[in-house]
Image 1 (tube, helix red, strand yellow):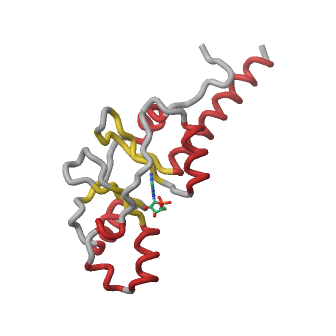
Image 2 (cartoon, helix red, strand yellow):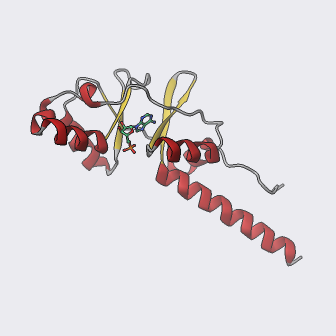
Length: 149
Ligand code: AMP
């Protein structure tokens, strides 16, 4: 039964958008990262040497920052040099409202989903916004149905 205020979870978002995660090994170059971002039309890649353990995350913003401070030489560096090591991850059971708050407060647009220590998916701010809108639409439809009974 539908309940008012029922919160959507990360697993609901994953069910809709899929669980594909693009990863790169820590010894991949920044140039390779740019290729991968373009190939997949994404803004960030999880850095992992075994496709399961999260070593870092690297986004287009890291490339832009390092291009500004170090110049084009950064393109030959490895992603390990520019990635963020202190990665905020979430679990499939987490509420999307909480994650939306963290993404807004800490100003990042990607969060890897980890279950029992293993990388299982990634959610972007776009996925979270879409999930919230769908949630609000469902709530609205139920309320309209309720008052029209
Ligand atoms: P983004 O908004 O995802 O392009 O990332 C902005 C900055 O935050 C970049 O320096 C990323 O490396 C970093 N970042 C992205 N996602 C995360 C995350 N889940 N945890 C920690 N840092 C992140």
